[in-house]
Image 1 (tube, rainbow, N blue to C red):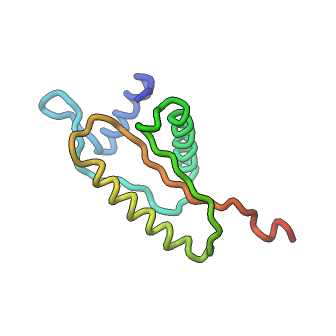
Image 2: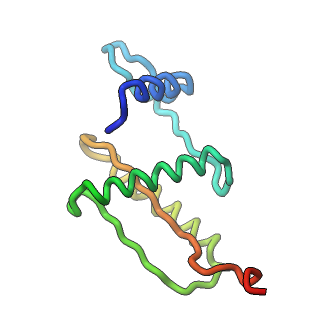
Image 3: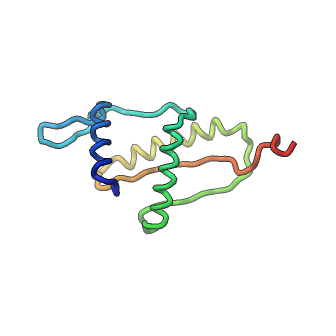
Length: 128
């Protein structure tokens, strides 16, 4: 995972404390089967840090990984801002569906999937 061993030990201890993993009889960690998600639309500093880290990892992947191993696509569009709540719902449904599909089969690698929808225009009050 391109993470120092000391960080991996901290993460494993945290996941065990949160009951995300436990130590199996075979001497290996195993998933507990618990599902964990964050609350939607919360502007928490820890979530902001996690999103910043995701952007850094994406930049590293863009510089390192072949186009066969990654997918970076985007669109710029003019939209009705009133449609954002429904758009976010559709993104979350698609994300969950794609995740379920990708987690099937033989798991050999770990991937990060991220979607970004953000305004490029400045609010009108900035020009008043």
